[in-house]
Image (cartoon, rainbow, N blue to C red; front, side, top):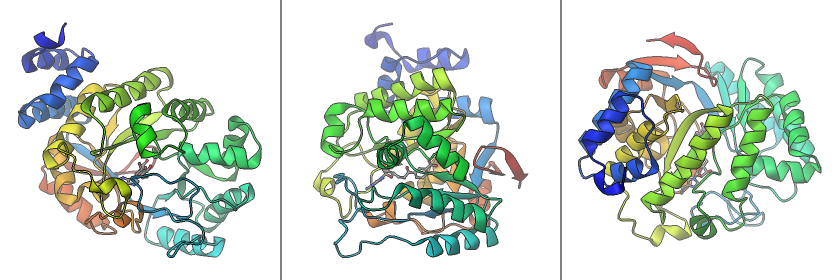
Length: 364
Ligand code: V47
């Protein structure tokens, strides 16, 4: 089918018959002026897979350090070691947060941080062990693929051995950060010092190969084009076909305060683009069970509205978030379990508390 002959009706036929959408179909949907028409198809695809269920979890983020050797142009979180506001939590501070989380009924600790120039490899093993000891029941989802590469160099170990050691110390799964946009032209401007898109994918393949699940993200709404987004999702879809190890896709809406990229005016960004991006992800990523609206970056209102646009996951209670808020996110720091349940119910959906691996814990 040529790009010219694509219509929303033909795409609807494909969705109804479970025919995989092409890259051209996805591009067409991104360019389609009728958000509601695209959203309706995404809601159809989601409803068929997930019914009215919407997942959330009770979790707590720990960003152990903002000191980072990389200088990503979209990031407002990182600091040089000697800069004002630079911090690095010690293990006691990590322990306190893990204990608090357990006390609040959390099932997950989410740990990511900067690429610290001086911490030894053993610090990361000790941090995992500290959380495991303080809160044995909590699942530890930690370290982006970018951190994993850094740790393997730090420890002088192969990727596989690095992952095995982290697993032994308590690592349960990996978050999806660091993916940004895979296309080299964009990546060069966003994060020239970061591992390439190809390397991010190769690390995730290794992660899945050693029995760990992971998430996948896409940072959008800055200098990328629709074609870059489709290319990004296409590479994820291809890897997912081979490993099945991704649990969820999370588009991250770019926040523009306090970072060098923020002066650019992106004509794509806004609520319509947020909803369209989530809807296209649902339709194009037919091998991803879950599409997450991360309320921290989207705000609660767009995140809730996204539940009518193909989304079936809202992330969790979070409690202490720095990466988005340093960059100007106006959402609250935390949401209570009751707030999330109310938000999901008000959208006419069924709230389901899940664990990190998407086992259902409780339906509300
Ligand atoms: O990799 C950094 C992004 C990511 C900005 O896997 C920004 O469940 C928007 O990956 N505007 C880290 N985004 C966060 C992340 C994440 C969050 C929640 C859940 C999960 C999960 C993963 O945040 C970074 C980067 O892509 N980021 N700066 C910014 N200015």
